[in-house]
Image 1 (spheres, chains in turn red, cyan, blue, purple):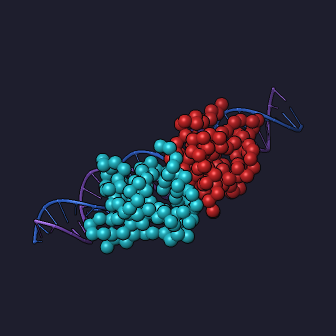
Image 2 (cartoon, each protein chain N blue to C red):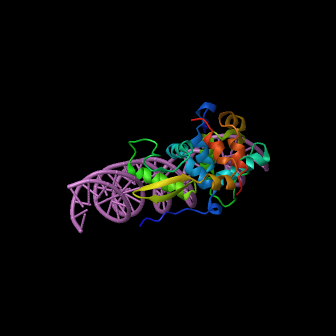
Image 3 (cartoon, chains in turn cyan, brown, green, orange):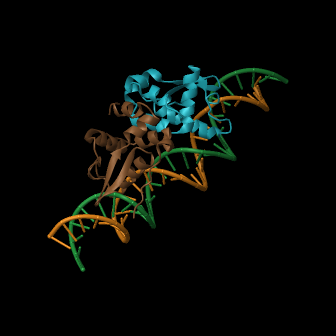
Length: 103
Length: 103
DNA sequence: TCAATAGTTCAATACTAGTGAACTATTGAA
DNA sequence: TTCAATAGTTCACTAGTATTGAACTATTGA
């Protein structure tokens, strides 16, 4: 059984969040989650179809351990949801500002 | 003669900026520069005195190549100044928001 | 000319990212 | 029940990046 590691709101660090969002692929994953405003499976939120599954899995792990997303199992899929409230509570306006940057 | 690499305003990337600020030591360097609101030498802006010179030099290089600071030679020292205008023009409010985050 | 100062560059080691292959867990059909 | 398909994870390998001591460069001042 796979156990997901999720930091508590207090454990979320600025360095972790910035580091997680410093990768263009991970930023696209987060933007997809914001655009859909809903749970998405890993493959649904994949930034590009040719990416290796293991690479994608690794990106989701980094986002999860940084506290940006929460992952839960639902059948054969993993449902990912943005932890918007937690991030906003910890670092006000940070997410919105980063996501509204060009590129 | 040492040549410093500075990206133009247009060449500054979000991933580069976030990656540069994702390190606690580099974030402290940038905060020092903001607090002083002036040029600082590398040793003046050093986040902790016991850090190796080469490590410090590497951190300044990363900040420089990300477009966060501009370095110029002044005598035996290197003077570093935050490229606040360039960053603000490229990514509005980003710097201010990140720097006002706790921790 | 020589020592001190401020950084950079180099080389070595240690850690981190990307990826194919193998694995696990769930579902649905025969 | 059994078996194949699906969705991710974990492992092992390679390649790139960070940290640091040592050696080097450039400037200043005695």
